[in-house]
Length: 87
Image 1 (tube, helix red, strand yellow):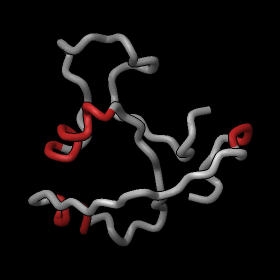
Image 2 (tube, one colour; image 1 turned 30 degrees about the vertical axis):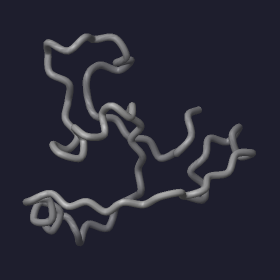
Image 3 (cartoon, rainbow, N blue to C red; image 1 turned 60 degrees about the vertical axis):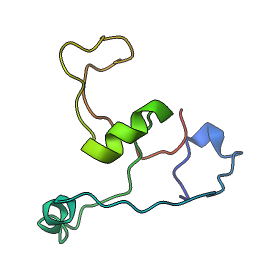
């Protein structure tokens, strides 16, 4: 997690409290075809705690058209960042 902070937030430190490993049927097979790709990097996805059960059971999905549009600054999509902290 080194060098994943926004420049003005380097005064903060992170401590890993718990780590969970999950598996979903079919996920390993989907990943295998990309395993040899060289341009991989660690990315972060921030979400509310209430979203975790859905993400773990169904994966990251784009919000459906009928979902309220508030909170989507860049439109509905799945977004990632290379920094763990909000900038």
